[in-house]
Image (tube, rainbow, N blue to C red; front, side, top):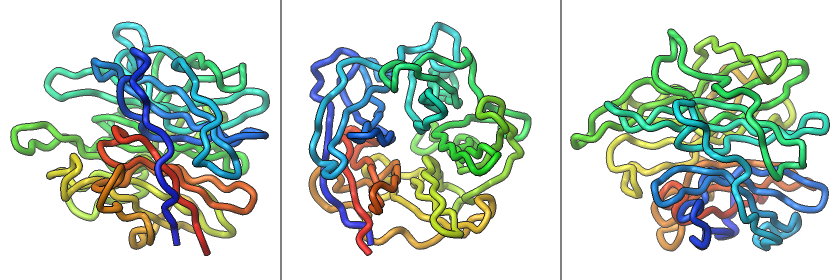
Amino acid sequence: MWVQQGHIFKPSGDFLWSQSHAQVPSCLVLQDRLRIYYTTRDEQGRSRTSFIDLDQQNPSKILSIHDKPVMELGTSGTHDEDGVMVGCIIERDNEIWMYYTGWSCGVTIPYRVSVGLAISNDRGLTFKRAFIGPVVDRTPQEAFMTMSPYVLQDNDTWRMWYGSGTGWVSVDDKQEPLYIIKEATSSDGRTWRQDNITSIPPLHPLEANTRPSVMKIGDLYHMWFSYRDSIDYRDGQGSYRIGHAISLDGTIWQRQDDPPGLSPSGNGWNSHMMAYPNVIQIDGRYIMFHNGNGFGASGFGWSEWIA
């Protein structure tokens, strides 16, 4: 079962670009440390991505805290002018690629999001956009939004599981987004084919699920993801929980019961919410980084699989 190991990090508010939140922790395994990219917010609520470095043997131990964002906001009118939120980090040749969610403010709805790609040539200290625009966006079949990508190189195919908007619903006179996890494929990681393939259908009409983390273990693909209700989900009864699914081919998924050990603690930083898992395997250990209350307002912590 998963055993919660505690809280790791919450921004101090010392930087103007980082006043709150350490959302969607995403791990890059380096030779001598774990680098956790996270998304933080300024006073205007705009998102930027930075990182901290952790001890490999004891992820509770912070080695360093980076003092600037790895990439600035996009220019006016682009898909990421109001936010750059890390989705996943992968190494390819001598480069590090970051797939991310780009944010732009809306009018009739609060925001629009889409998936971008940025590349680092300095070992992940800074990233430059591969394209000004998104790489996975709205299509005739996916009319609302895309977000929270997780990419896996699977033999000769690049596979992306990501959140895809299915609409908006009015709850207490507020527009709330609905989304489900879908799959896209690519031959090079840059140009993606979206075949409108649903990975995780919602359990009920008001469920939203997103932020997958996928790993192949033996003959099975495992996916950990976040799901919530559309009613009372801001640290309430409908708040995010962490789900789990398995698959033989990575396309047809069987949803499992929630992973044991990952329920909200009832007190402290994750008393009401557990969200945005990212699972890695290192030295035979399975480690999950995840958020707690407030969609990352309380920072992030970690759990470990204990057989």
